Length: 484
Image 1 (tube, rainbow, N blue to C red):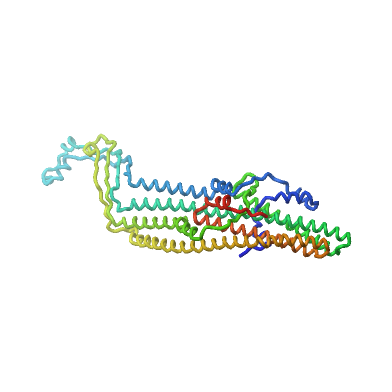
Image 2 (image 1 turned 180 degrees about the horizontal axis):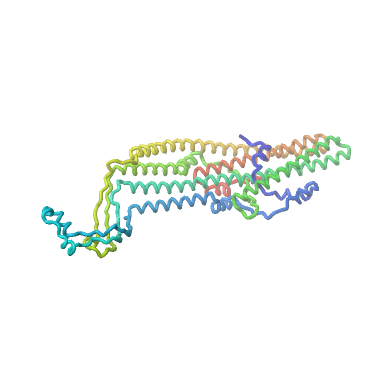
């Protein structure tokens, strides 16, 4: 859909552009504009190139900062997953109070023997030879270590999942950068477009003002009728209103751009709209998009996570093998403590027989997740192909429209000159002059809108193909600046 001259101001009412120098000249020379100048005092402005604006967003944008923090989080989780292969070592201390000390008597030993029923009832021996194994208050402390040797691949799967999450976070940042780059191009060059619209409105206002002054003189000389002078005056007043409206749109839009790049002073775009003589073939953009688009890389990372989850669930069918060891740090002065070993090491095996976690269902679910990602990636590649082809054709259409309107611009300029001369000689009406001025303004606005659409389409192509850094080359070295 092509932007008409009237739609340009409506579409970009939320954009911001600094007032042109010619606007100040008009205000100074027109008594009708003195109150407007007083109501809007000039503020110090900050010229910003598109490259500088992009660098400011990369370093200061909160959304990008949030994605970087997410990357740091996933990297920390990935580091934590690496520690799963390390042994788990813990120090424990326990205090226990028993209802009575643990003692062993000779009668207890004799009664436990086969002849215990024959020989019994030796209280004298119990009094003399009773041994206390533990006291009522027992304190123990030890160091225990467990080192996994084989876990059925679950540790490796956990590390693969953590790595996939880090890759996903990295690509999310890249996608956020691409989206932010497109937003900046719309705001920044939308401001440049509105600036040119304002310049065009100023030119129309100045032209119709001169026409109005000329019509007043011709009316005084009796060369034109009063209705011609009224037509010229009405057209001039309407042009002044349109210029004031464009000025207000610029102020609103400039605020939006300033807030976006977090500039200290009102931002003024120093880079204007541009076009290129030609574009690389569509296949180059398409190949780069399918090879490096972050959205596809995100799906690959999700597939890796799903595969890791499937491996982890399958690992629950395998036994766990681990080494363990225990060393006592403290022993009481009791017989039980003295007879207990100071340390112990061994190998343990844990074989799952019946598992209540639903491992078979989870394996199927993980397999379905892998299949889902495969279908999503295929659909994403198809959608990206359509997007690149559509955007490329839109860019070429805008470029063709801009170039095709060059002859219309030359005709409109010549028509204004001829209509002014004819009016001075009484061979043309005031309405003819006004129509010529408005037609010239519409052609200029339509060319500027076509250039804007081209720049936006180019920015989108470079964003989806991960070639954001090439934008400066298209702008500075190959770009043809669009003049208002």
